[in-house]
Amino acid sequence: MLSHTFSSSSTFELLSRKDTLAVIPLVKNCEPFEAGVIPAGLEEASSQQMNEVWTVSDSVSRGKTGKCYWSKTSDLICVAYWLSKDDCGNIEDSTQRGYEAMLALLEKEGFIYPFRFWNYLPGINVGQGDEELYKKFCTGRLNAFEKSGLTPDNFPSASALGHHTEGAVFYVFASAIKPLHFNNHHQVNAYEYPRQYGISSPSFARATALTLQRAPYLFISGTASIIGHETVEAGNLERQLEVTLNNIEHLMANANPDNCSLSTFKVYVRYPEHIQRTKDWLMQRYPHVGAVFTLADICRSDLLVEIECFCR
Ligand code: 3EB
Image: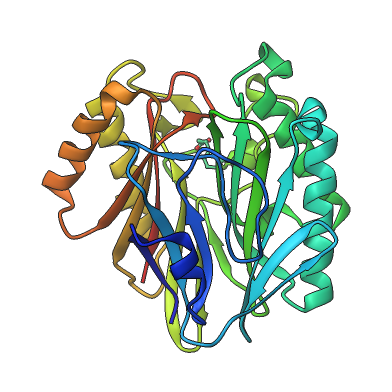
């Protein structure tokens, strides 16, 4: 059983539990510390002490191989890889190297199916046109996927956000059994976005389903106010929330083979002044879904909010 919870307990206490796969403290630093903890540079929106916790029912082993920090059970591995401030000076090459290292470790450990990636980068919207940092990250990621033989129909679900500190982190969940990836019929497949969004399209699926030890899960990628390939409702927070949740509901209805239910939201809000309105909007409509709110830059500068989901 995999579960995703939010806890204000200390990171050390959470890590001391044998069934903790990963703790993601929502803190400003983005650097490795010890296997199983992933400081990702993302701040909790109201500066509360908060950790995201992924818990399993087996006992977890943890370790470090080269620059990869990992934790695993018999059917699931989590691997994290950090870039230093200097590495981020050449984000394209550093991303490619990082992804290659993670994919090589997955292969070596026998978890050959990456199914969910998170990417947190500094200055994600810095640079004009094709020079934007996010777009260079996309090229590095695609190069690594192509070198490893991963084709678009096998691209995993993902989120890619900007934090406000130095360094970057990528982390991935991977399985030994093949997951099922889905797209959203109301959106152009991300890996087929037209040229105007960059030299290399973003390499991710909209949602990924998999069953571990007979329990089904659905991971929904970071989802935003995009229809077709275009941002809609630029400048309007509530309408962007509506389109975003319509996209999520479409995936719940059409990309959800085991009929999982929404369990948690991880919400990324660009502007601090939008936090309360975002919380109010979601609390009114989804009171039973656990949610954590972070301040982050979304990879298109006209997007105000992005939401990812874990369903079980
Ligand atoms: C979008 O739908 C919004 O590059 O890994 C969402 C989720 C977005 C993942 C990624 C980007 C990524 O295009 C942005």
